[in-house]
Length: 458
Image (cartoon, rainbow, N blue to C red; front, side):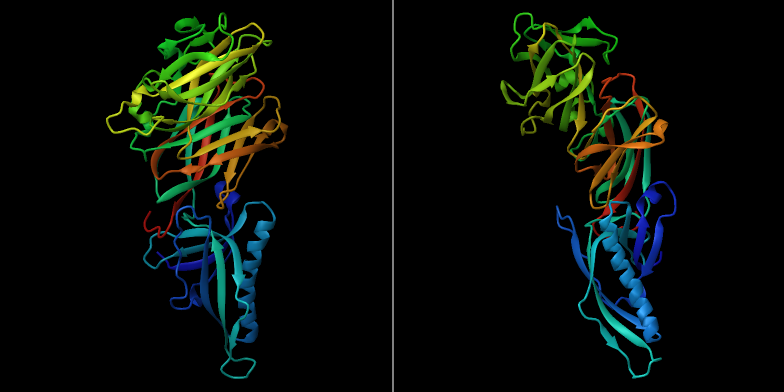
């Protein structure tokens, strides 16, 4: 345990790749005026915090004082320089109380010096000691972070609802996922990831992320399921087929509820999800559209139509749903909440073939990445970096092309790990080849735990 108050220029990418992280540092502790800093506490939803630090900077001479002041000016200048170029260097305020076990730090968003500096010398002699009274104004990120990251990994994670479990994440606010790396066995250009925590009273390990549509009991309008349609390319080996033989216009085809979709631990399905449908048309000349409705007892909310445009299996986002779909009293039966799949054929004479639904959690943390371009198979991996100011940048890299990088378009909501334990659910697809039941990935998450006030021994 060592008390500290330090400005640190840090390279975060180096931290993630276990290289040298602290580029330079400047201790403010010996300069701090008694009661000269009162750390602020962020209110809910705050993006930044303003603070002032009162410093009394001594110098053995005027020249020595100038050196001291210039070292502080350098750190203020570095704050601005780090904002000018979107790289991974940043200046942090690192602190630790005298009897606090571990240090914590917050990234500085901007730094300001007081417009005047009080210079004092007891005698008008060039070599006499000199001091400066200095007010340092800082705007920082609202949460304190650990000074080192934790690494969470998963191997052979299926990219149709496979999960990576985590546990022992400390902090009192969600940990920052500084890097997500998805090293796929295929050539995946689009990925969804969602965090399922225990904060709604559920057991994340029991969450069922894949719903087999062939397990539904109720089929309508030219639609068959169950064990009627055998298909080795379906995840469960069976599909649901809508022929449109008598009704080609938009009509209900399937109704499935939690009891049918989640085969076990159904109460652990409570939450909010982005619903992905795995589907295809029977041939390249047939096009269809589907839409999801959610509700119970004939009362439901209708989502927009989604075009099924391929004869290869693909994942199609149908919209977001809360389970249960309506606020409900404690004695309400959650199993009665239904998902309706409507469909229509818009061109051709073929059929619509559906496999299942991937339930990507979107309440506790959600990330969607999609490439702006398509390319061939190779040794491909996807990476998403979340900076301390919450900005997310992402790319796909192909080492077979000399680690050429291709941009990805990040879409995120509360992307982080809730403290405690949970699972992260994944789905992905190749933009050309579509979705495969055998594609897996090695997943790596580098996370920094976070606190609003003190870190203590965590």
